[in-house]
Length: 294
Length: 313
Image: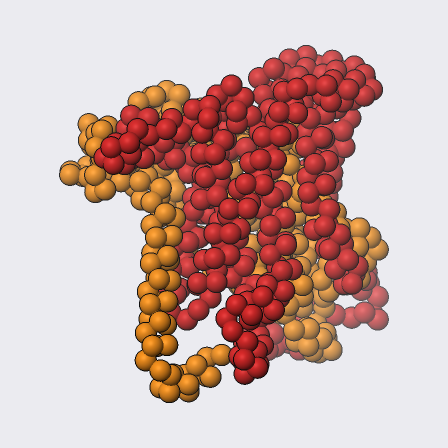
């Protein structure tokens, strides 16, 4: 369509060109409005975080606050009752631990699924899909019973195990799709040259699948960082809280301290939004190759 | 890529040796099982075993507080089928799922069509739309609660400045629709990304050929865009529906199922039965019921994908 449009453009009558301009202006108006709606809550988190408390409770809030303050953020970071640094570290440990675990296991399993033959292959593939449909509430009761028995309730390792429930199947499945989209010839050439399967996996497939790995790692990390339900059920100890639970504790303990709440929400959100936006290029490509591939 | 350039290095050669026997050859023959082992063990431990255990618990009288459990057959299921609160929860979950998926799909598709054209700043614009997806659901729920606040909320202020009285967004009449609005805001980026990927995979030549044949914009949309984007759209819609059906965080933080059970979606009902009432057996039965509903929703998706796995495996 592009080449056709370019060559035809100069010969088009003025009215048609004009209507095209009006059309693209309308499209821009819709896009800008959608951007506003998509971003506004995020903006409102940041705005509340840097607004002094009295102004945050104004009955006529303005889009940009009249005065700015970093007090809320400092107060949250140094708060002795709700140790933000501790929660942040806990969240980072759990998310990184889960990501590494599912990435290693998932990429091995996905490679076998995509390229090798083994008994039970089809059953394995199908169960990966079915498991993605398990609701968290279906797994939480049995996991809670078992975790209580083996001391994984109130334990960050327990969260890593719980987060593996929903990350491992989809990581394996997405990577399988991604590996399938990589041309096979390079692997065959390496095999003929005497490379073992493991050699092919580590020297050929994984390096070529780097964008796909980046995509699923981003998703697994953000999924774990943003998880609320398991953390809410499994963690009670203050020192073991992750950010999700620390934040909800904020509402219970300081019912009116919205500025502190959103200062903490800002510090929680910015790292994952940054990761997501930086890796979104890979994300879209990786998702397309892995999940939506027909 | 560079790693693939030296596949015949001496180290690689020693690894391979299908015919020389020994440990290397053994590992090589069993390589698929070795590679699959960690994933299989993981999934058996954290997914399959809990599923079966949950099924077992659903046939028991079992409380959170006591270590004892008695087998009671189908009595939990009988009780649940006669429980108006559970049916209410299922009904609310269905409204929540259908409405939020419908609106997020329409918005996502409309925007995907707009963003599929060439225009300046396209990359930045796309990144912006991914932000609601990236924001943790608990933060999203908290800020929406703050925006919905009757006194200090920005929405109430907006209504006031227009001279209207704002509805009580999280009150009985509006709460479910407020939750749906938040869910739509949170989930349209997923639809947008999936549909944009689908649109971009449509070959340009098809549109050129249709344009040469004199098809107008609407004809091209009906006969090229829609049919070619349909498989991708189906997967996106079904995944979103499954996700919405077991979504806990946003309803929990915004309303905790209230007021007067108006937003008591089934994940919240199940959570309450399990961890507030402490009735594990009954909650396990509710979770099984919920899973059956999900299987029902996603029957097509499963069928499609099982066929694909058969083609490959």
